Structures are given as structure tokens and as C-alpha cells.
Image 1: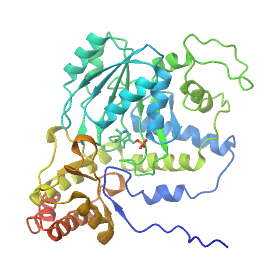
Image 2: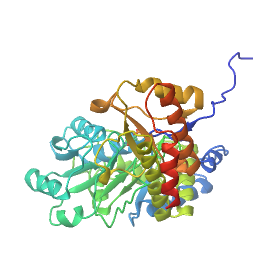
Image 3: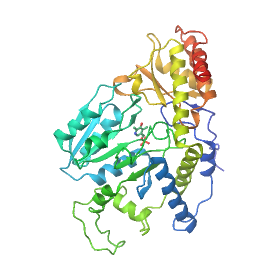
Image 4: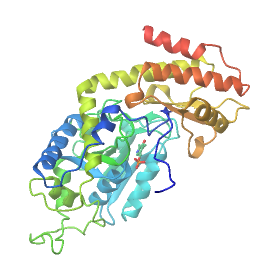
Length: 406
Ligand SMILES: *Cc1c(COP(=O)(O)O)cnc(C)c1O
């Protein structure tokens, strides 16, 4: 007998920038029994998952699969596999996750160039393409939706503007996928990675990735023989990929028809990732984006209706998260704690230059829902009132209801 009680999580409504409350279908899928990783049932689900994520990413890329690990594992797999020491990398930075791409690029030994925008703004496509023309990078790595600032970087038109440059474009779509438009092939993105804990309505721990044929060719050129596992001749042209676990060439051999043993597939995460995609595609990609737009608009109108200000260029806000300025004289952490302990609702804090300045409130995945929005707004009003802040009575839910009434 152990004295530790069983794990019973407190009921919570997670309305921060991720993770969010998981969709019940995803939790149910994740409670299913294991099968061996080369069981035909399992390899069938792996193939099925690849196909589902091709649709989610809007791509025909054969190499579309899961990296086992949180979203950051997908980001690292992409960058460590694409970049050799000395390669030039260009990162447009407009928030925390741009800095992460830069930092990972440095660890890969790349020669990293950045262009920067103040937090709360995005780049014109033209600024990015002229930097590409100047730096001539092998890889352009950018974030689509940066939850640290709530901004959504426009990417449409980038590929046309880059035509002629043979730059490989990598995009971190973790926070935006499913809640904002993303078209991998139409936008000419070579490698896109994501995670489950934002608009996909799952837990963190799996990183869907899609890799274009020319990016596949690049990483496969760096494939080296792994002693004891592979009999193939060592045909590597470039330097060996510095990570074994995150080596995309090996992951491709593992997910592809060769099924060369690599790591033990994280079965339960695959069940979850597969169900996230099924939930999304059952609803419809366009419908999901529209739902995130609607509930994000209601949350935005609601916080403004309470008399609060929002941060950043609202014309480029992601649908699924809003940054709300903490009113003068109000202790932001105390308000968050009050919402959590008294009402069971979690909203987010912020990093870097926004720390202590804004709360981040998400409406994503399963929680991009009318009752979740209205409950959060009613609670925020109450907690702000308790904190002595001036708020417009009923202004939050009232303004959100007007959005819903169209
Ligand atoms: C939330 C988020 C991540 C999360 O990475 P994890 O490794 O899953 O914590 C990555 N990138 C962006 C842009 C995000 O918003």
C-alpha cells in the first residue's frame, strides 16, 4: 500500500496560451491499450496518421509524420537536420519563439542572421524577401503565430516572392495550426512543425511535421550508416546530423515503407495526435478556423467591453489568443491566482518585455466555445472588481454576446 492518493486533477478551464483543456475524444483515444510498434494495427495507424496530417497541413508531402516530443522537438528536428555548421540561417524575430529559432540555429553551428520587429508587430513579406536577397541564407526559419505577442505573421505570397531563391523555408505553426489559415504547399513552405496543445485540442508531447521533397533530399544527403542497424552503404554527402533522436533522415526511414527501427514509437501520443487530427478534420479545416475567429473575436470584444486595453497590432492578431493590458494598480498575478483558485479558470502570464504588463487569454481547440468565453469574461469581471479595478458591469459578456448575435 502506498500512502499517495490517486491522481485526480482539479476541474479546470484552461484559457491561457496553451496547454488548453483537452478534447474528450482525445483523452479517450489516449486511454486505449498498447500494441507492439510493428504490429500491423500500429503501422496501419501510423500510415493513417501521416495521411490525416497531410490534410491538416494542406500538403501533398509524402513525408508528413510525428516527432515524439513536445513542439520544440519538432523545431529542433527540423533545424538540426537542415543546418550544417557554417550554413547561413535567417530568422525574422517578432517574439519569443523567433528568439528560440535563433538560439537553436546557433546550437546547430549555423551563421545566424536576424531581422527584428518590436513585439506586437509583424513583418511585411517584402521585408523578409529583401533580407533573404541580402543574406542569401540556406534556410529561412520563421514562426507563424507567436503566442508570446499574439501576432500572426502573414506568409501568403512569400513563396512567389522568393521564387528563384533556393532557400528552404521552415515554419513553426505550433500555436496557429487549426485556428488560423495555413497552406503548406500553396505558400511554398518546405518544413512545417506543430504541437497538439494549442488549437488541436490535445496534450503536449507530439510534434506533427511535414517535409517537402527537396527538404527530404537535403536531409537524406546527410544520412550516415548507424552501426548494427543499417546495412546501406554510407552515401552521406554532408556532415552527420548532430542528433540521433531528432535525425529526420532516420525518422523518415522509420515512418516510411522501410520501417527501420529507430526509437519506440510513443504509442499513446500517437493515439492522441491521430484523434486530434480526426476531430479537426471531422469539423473541417475552414470551419475550425472560422470557429477560432468567432470565439477569438468574442473574447477580444469582451475584454474591451470590460474597459480593458489590448496589446499589439490587432489587424494581425492570431484568432486564438489575445494579450490584455493589466490595468494600473492591479496585481496581475493576484488576479490570475484568484481566477484559478476561486473559479478554476487559468489565464496566462507573459514573458520578456511583456512580463507583468499583459495577461494572455486563449480561445483554442476545444475551449474555442461560447460557454468558455462567457464564463471566462464573467469571472474576469468579478475578480477584477474584487481587486478594486474599475470595470464596466456586464460589459464583457454583453460585448461578446453582441459578437455572437452577429
Ligand atoms: C506554444 C508554442 C510552442 C510550444 O513548444 P513546446 O515545446 O510544446 O512547449 C512552440 N512554438 C510556438 C510558436 C508556440 O506558441
